[in-house]
Image (tube, rainbow, N blue to C red; front, side, top):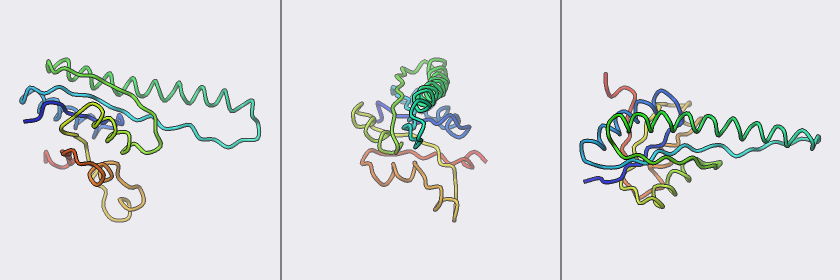
Length: 150
């Protein structure tokens, strides 16, 4: 069965729900988990070069704070369930690429993600990191839909 699950989180309630379910799965099959959050790259165009460094530093501090918050929640859920958990925060413009790369590097055999359940034009315009992971990886992906418990 599965021995190592990758759990991406963006701190959203749906990610939190996926974490709960994934940790339950990991516990039931004796697997370990790795949590990942992808921090955005800093991008800014400005003519005032001196303001860029302060803005960049603050952006990085805020991104790291959010990442630490998301991953500490994940770690707490795993610890409470007595599941071994490692957590990593990475930076990238395309979260799906970082999710797949981390799953491969850490030899995960399942990626567990939430789906926001967007349909129609919202799905087209907003895209879906879950969909991108599904279409670009060879590692199995378990997608948890927000309405699955209803």
